[in-house]
Structure formats: C-alpha cells, structure tokens
Image (cartoon, rainbow, N blue to C red; front, side):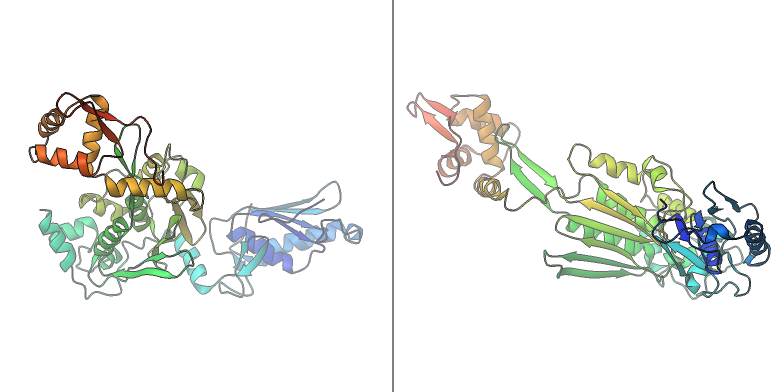
Length: 452
C-alpha cells in the first residue's frame, strides 16, 4: 500500500501534472513520485497495461525539453516489481527550476508544501535566485544613500569604541568608493528594521504592544530591555533553609540570547518583522528566514552558520556578543534541571523559538501552595529571614546575640530592629522558651500554616 507524504506523491497516470510535481520536488527537498497508483494507495490496473517503452520515452523527453535548468542526474526513473513507475527526484542546487514554456514566474515555478504543491510567489522566486547565486545582502549597495548614524556614533562614544570613516569601511557599512551597503542601512538611523513586542492575557487580549524601529542596534537594545522588564521573578521561601529563592520566568541569559540570535540570523532581505510575544506559559521569538545552510538537528548539536557574518562580527566588536554560535547551547543549558525545555521550529521563511515560563503553574493545583507562600513573603522581610536562619543554627540564642551575629555583616542593623522584628513579625515561626532573662529563642516545632 502506498501513502502520500511531504516526500511522496501518487499519480494514477503519467499526465502533464507530473511535470509540476517534479518541479516542486526539485525546488524543495526532493522526493518520489509513484505513477500508476490511485489516491487511496491501490495500484491502477489500467496503467499496468500501458506500453512501458512509450512511457519511458515520454518521461525522458520531458527531462530534456520541459524543464529549465536541465535537471541532469537529479531525476531518475524505473518500473518496480509491481509495474509502478517510480520517479526519484533530488533537491536541485540551481533553483528556481521551472517549466520552460512558462518561464521563471509564478505560473511555471512550484514548490512542495506538505502533501501538495503550490505556485511560488514572485518574492519566493527571487529568494531562490538570490540563494542559488550566493547573493550577499549585507555587502550589496543600499538603495538609500542618504543615511545618518547618530545612534551608532553615540553608542561607540559612550563605550570608547573608535568609529569613523575607516571603521565604517572595515566593518562593511560602506564601500571604499563611499557608497553605503545594506549593512550600513541596517545600522543607520534610517534602518527599515521593525521589531514587534507584545504581551497577551489568558484570553489573547493585548496587555502590551510596542514597536521598536530605527537603527538595528537601537532596536536590539530596546527589545532586550523591554523583554527583561517582562521577565518576572517569583520569590518563594524555602522552609528548610529559610532562604528566599528567586526564580526568573526565563532563566539565565536564555531570553537575551534568543533575541540576540534572532537579530543576528534574520533574513533582512525578507520584508518581515522580528516578533517577541509573551504568553502566560511561554515567550515566542520569531525571526524571518529559516535556518541558513544547515538543519535544526545540526544547530542543536552546536553547528552554526552565519547568514549575516558581517553583522555578527560588528556586534562582537561592539561587545554585544560574548561567544560566536553559543546562543542555542547557552539557552538549553539554562533550562537544564528545570523540568522544562525550549522548543525550536524551522521553516523555509521563519525560525521560531518557544521558551517556557518557569513560573507558569497550574493555577488550581497550586492555589493552596501559592496562598501559603504569598502570605509568608508578605510577612517576612530579609531581616526576618536572617533572624530565623540564625535561630535555626543556634537554638536557645538570645536577642542580643542575634544582633551581634547579624550586625557583623550589616552595620545598619540595631538591637531594637532585631527585637521589633521578633515581636511583630516572627511570632508564628520562633518562640521564647524560658524566662526573658535566662531563656532563648527556638524555631517552633510545628511550622505555621495560614488558616490554622
């Protein structure tokens, strides 16, 4: 039984539509076409009665006359033991492949999408041409030559980085003949870069919506700053150590790294927006342009390719990149041991990263624990926690001794502050045993729980 998939197509007859299927596989990831098979996967008995020599001649003629560029050695065919014509198509390196009679336009260029094909848009055809010819967007001459660099110059001045005519040429912002490149355009105040940052509530209504424009450098810094503001930190008191444990929603440098990665690897030739979208349980970072000359599997293994090599080099010179090609690895490492993992999705036109929110929990299951922790956090300040930890380590300790221990590290603490904290805030957690003259403080044996 035969089954269609993103790399398998079934056709009952060798009709002209098969040409379109061959074109689509050449322009995508390759695949197989089984001719003589019905849509339900059964063999078309009438096809078996056709003349094999005539079918072979017809297909061979197509390969020489119907397609351009000629798909030499990329398409092979033969009849299998069931009499089905099996056409093997490899992905081509000289895209776009198209029907010669139609030319390199939407009516003659196809691509595979799932289990079907569709015509390519003019933008997609242009992108194929650029990729096949190794077009370097960064170094191409910018259409806009009326550029200013106020933000970049100010940033360099503030960080004591040399930035003049010589550096602009060396870094690739301008050619020796004085013409600005597209990299110069991206870093200029007139940059077309547009970044969308949004936050949604549980019903997908906007809680926040911002757009950052201008120099790519400014958009990057503004986006990272806004994202860090939205990286909420939860604080929970550990009843064993009596320390306040803080957990950022997005651990380590994961949020910063993925945003930086999006800016570094976006295909700026595609007129689309970088997006950073915060949901209750995750953040989604979308960058235009799929992975560049690599696979997701290789990226997760640490393999890196650079679509914007000069931009990466420039950001490194500006001190915004610590290590080339470590963003994904550092992000994965930040989530180790948390019980949650980032997710990555790659398509031809977009690369998407989902970072799970470590502070997102099932509200029903955690309602009681949240109530307890919220009350403790409201009641006990840092001084109170220090007193509790000191009492735990020194059962029977007196107030003046607590003061002596804590004030050795913080000269701002007074004996009255210690006594007031014990009397006003900590009665649920520590107790005086014995007289005030001869007794001392101990942790209560039964931990306090709200409502008891």
